Image: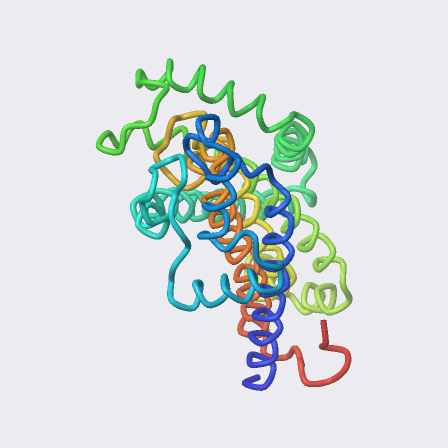
Length: 316
């Protein structure tokens, strides 16, 4: 186990370094206007002098090495347009707590609603009318088929009217947190319900479950101790994907509700063409994605200790 964890952490570090290099090179292809707040008023000579001071005239490999040195010291650079000359790390420190709170709460809501829905759908397949299965299937189809931007707008429009709250987010008003959290949760609720239902149905048709029923083991105990316990193991590997869905959803949802978090900030700096901030925020999201995948693999090892990661069959 320890060897596997060490290898996965090492692989994640290498992956993150590769991602940083790729993102760095791609963002260096952006127009140089994004590095200046008053580009239109600057002469060509002044532009070249400023680029040289920022190290942007050096060869790309030299720039990458210098950037890694900055990252090791926790330096993400300074903003060029959003807050001219202000350290990006301080801006992120101000914005990140709100996004983290929204993300964690929405994931908790997704698990609290999605897992029970998946369980009820799986159990309902054994009943005559299959009501919960039909209800869950309709819900999942709607969420998967309708573009997320559409139902996010509908949630904001009708939800604010039903709750009697402003369409815009207010950090001091708990009621304005409800709609953004629900918007971020709804996709993952459908996701968890769909996959748990599938795994539980597959598990309930296996021979050892039929044997347990034949021995007279109560259906509730079979469902809890065998079907759900074994069905949740493969579902754990989808946790990182749900984290990524939440991160991607926050980009639109935070902008929609004017939430002063990381998602809305990224959209804003892209519009401003603040190259340095775009680079820093994209790298932060990439790092979170890599850490999410690492977290999912480690959760798989912890949830089911029967899985062996030491052999070739465990290599990924």
